[in-house]
Amino acid sequence: MPWVLITPVTERGCMSEVDYEKWDSAAYKVLYIHGCFAQQHIEVEKRFEEDADAATIREYLAQSKANVLACGHGWDNLTTANDCEIWLKADELPDWVKDRVFVLLSCLTGKELGPALVEKGAKAFFGLYDIGLLPALPEAGYCRYFYAPLIGLIEAAVSIELGYSVEEAARRAIERWENEIHYWMNFYDEQKIKLEDGSEVPVDDNLAQLLITCLAWNRDVFVAYPVGVGAAEATRIAAAIAGAGAVIGLAWLLSRYPTIAPSTPSPVPE
Amino acid sequence: MSLEAIRDWVSRIPKAELDMPSIPYQGKVYTPKQILEMAEAGTLPDELQEKIEAGAFTTAEEVYQIGLQRVKKYLEQLPPKLTLYVGTQPYSVKELLEEVEKGSPIGRAFVEAEIRKWETLYRR
Image 1 (cartoon, chains in turn orange, cyan):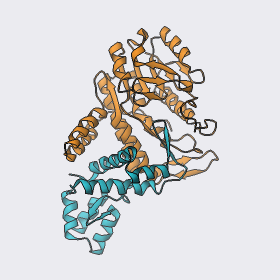
Image 2: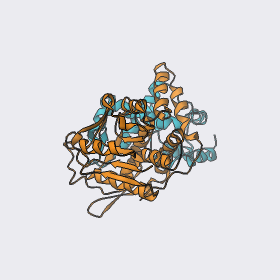
Image 3: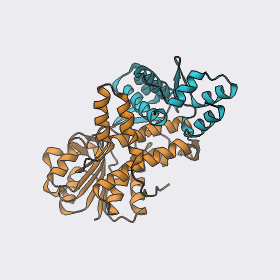
Image 4: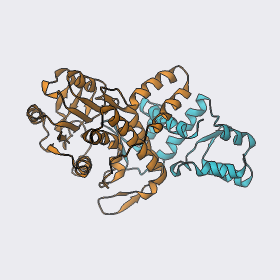
């Protein structure tokens, strides 16, 4: 099944502090996502970037059967395109969402939008149950440090394309974050942050620790429907247990994830 | 626990963890490197050795202090220009530190995330 990639490039409506001409973080997302899909030879039917406005996206998807991977800001029940226009909303879902997979790199959409999509007939939804965490540095160029926090969600999309079930794809996504955490825990000093002026900043243990927190956080709020697999589920259960005073329950639940059966994660474009 | 056992314990800790405050003892939180230095100097208290061996760091207050010190340790040494997007909300390193210090919801979430990291590494 081909994919439609939606990577909005103007988000000024809700992130006015960001000057995209200088930061260009949307460009990194686009480069990374496109790089992963190209590396796996996944057919991309259409890319929305500068033209990622709500009406154009909806009009296109009404005529297409492709799966959808979309970035953009999100809320419990919606996700947005360029200039924060809402293009998908839980209580106004059109019939064309049926029979396709949605991967949303979009905060909070795992709460209402994801379940609503599956209820409406979508094959699967992969997204975040809570806010996501992303480090950024104004003068930095494209490098692994900044795209790593997205890595599990991209793995979910790639795994679906490789023929894995929704449950297996979700497990591979979590495992991909786990592998990335292991990498930054042990080999952070192999990496450098490239700056736009050509210079490089070595990644030290403090930068690594911040990134590891982002990776673990995003892993823990990841969720997949219809199977309900995801660390988000464990986090919610753990919160209930911790609330009852059993802190050790949290450690036990979180320690389950590194034990997921090994698979071969997709390579990461450098 | 012998010096060799402490060396073996430290060798199994990920590199990024070696300077992180992780082992609480009598009101202080020690890094694995400090533990190794004390062991090599012969000044590591028996009681602390036993705690390490047992992974016995159990009080909630102790655990929260570890999380707090770990977050502060790395945030204080990050490049000041680094920004963290918490959803759509950008936080500078200084702002994040303030949130952690005052125990706001986002500050506590960071400390709790750090506790989870620590739990998986040190707790038995």
